[in-house]
Structures are given as C-alpha cells and as structure tokens.
Length: 143
Image 1 (cartoon, rainbow, N blue to C red):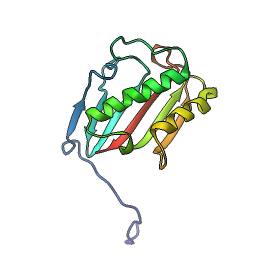
Image 2 (cartoon, rainbow, N blue to C red; image 1 turned 180 degrees about the vertical axis):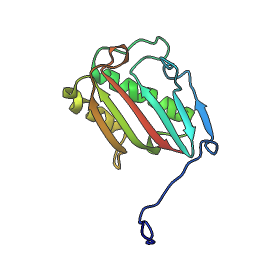
Image 3 (tube, rainbow, N blue to C red; image 1 turned 30 degrees about the horizontal axis):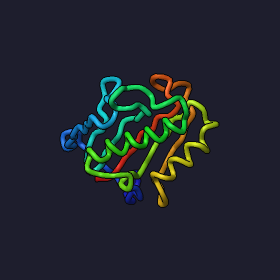
Image 4 (cartoon, one colour; image 1 turned 120 degrees about the vertical axis):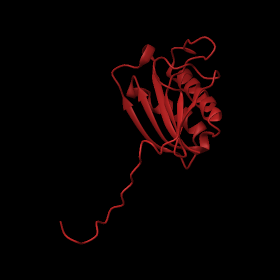
C-alpha cells in the first residue's frame, strides 16, 4: 500500500454509540411481526414498511391501489408525527408494488404528499406483499 492518502472518507459507527428509540403510535396500524413502526437513531427516523390498513380495524381501506396508497401515506404521516417530524423531513422512500402497472396511479397520489424537491426514491414490483397488499412504502427521515 502506498503512503498516499486515500481519497475516500470513512465513517465508523460503533454499536455502543448508537442511541435507538422506538416510535409507536396507535394512529397507524400495529406491526404485523417482530419489528417496530419506526426507530429513531443518530438524527434519523427509519420507518418500517407501511400498509394501507385502517388502524382501528386492521383491514384494508379497499382493494384499489389508489385507496391503499392514500391510506399508506396517511399512516406514514401519523408515524412521522409520532417521531416529531413530517413529510418534509423525508429524504428517502422505497415503494413496493404488487403490480408495476400501478406506477402512474401511485405517482399521482405520492406527489400530493411529497412535492418538489421530492425525496430520493426506489420503486420495485415484488412477488407478494403482506396480507396481499397492493402497495407498501418505507422511508427514512431526518430529525
């Protein structure tokens, strides 16, 4: 190895230095398994995948991707609020769709919640989602 400096920055995070705080709210659907609705860590909030379930019933708002998308984003808003932030704090989203043919419909609704400058985003079609959902969205926000 040469004595020249390496032109890349290095970030080291020790597991003991990370302060994690669980975020939970009854205004969004409860987790379906052994995970948290969200975790605050190192000035970030990590939201688990959110489905279009009605919090009070645990049932889907409807079978339409439009209704489920709207409910997902409402649920996400409640979790963000419980974290002390809002949609404007979101820096990255990941959208999982049962059918990529729904991409345009989802974008129209998504744009109402995330106007420019929109967060970075990835969108994937997946083989299946929990409870046969049409859409699931997770995100990362800054505190």
